[in-house]
Image (cartoon, rainbow, N blue to C red; front, side, top):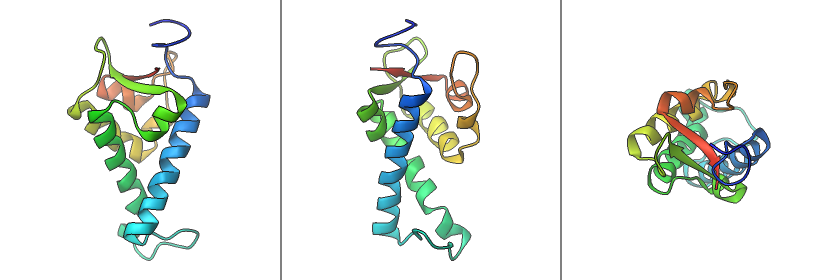
Length: 127
């Protein structure tokens, strides 16, 4: 992969922008459609999991079909399978569930690939 420019591995700043945008969108959806608690304690565990569930669904559907989420698109990023120009639904499901769990996404290797990307066989690159 190139060191810089299109096709290079996405750096932390762009990733942070993308996940912030996606989480904000999913929070608005969770509040508007499912009554998720915004700024107050969740009434139940199911209630507390609404926004992460919406986030997982957004990631699975958009990455699995378009190759990027809304946040990825705004930050100039896309998800690809290693050695392929796009991704597919199965890697998107693996990646989406792991991203929603947050912990795997917080750890990455020396190539700046998150644990969620390694398990899914994907990589987040600049578009």
